[in-house]
Amino acid sequence: MVHISQSYSRKFSTTFGNTIEAIGNSEKILRETRMPAVAIRYGSTEDLITDSQMLLKVLTEAISSWFSEPFE
Image (cartoon, rainbow, N blue to C red; front, side, top):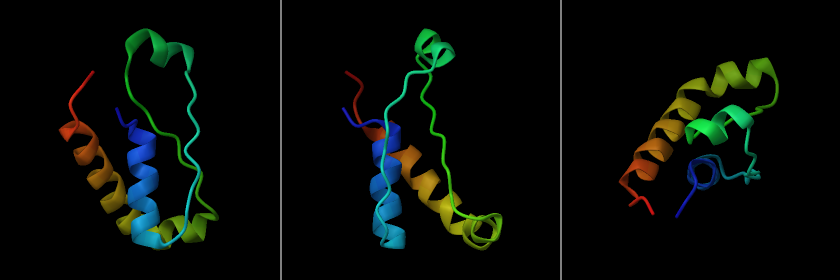
């Protein structure tokens, strides 16, 4: 089973050519609801604004890919 953060990390690396580390973390509220979530830290505000459309595309692809994986 692929976690959504791993899917995002792979899509990000393919698109931007940089690798990012996916760190698993169980927040209490998320453990109780079993809701997937990804927190992203991304450089400066200027970089975030410049790359926002591509980041959205990568996140959308990662979510679509994650939903297509069978649940275990």
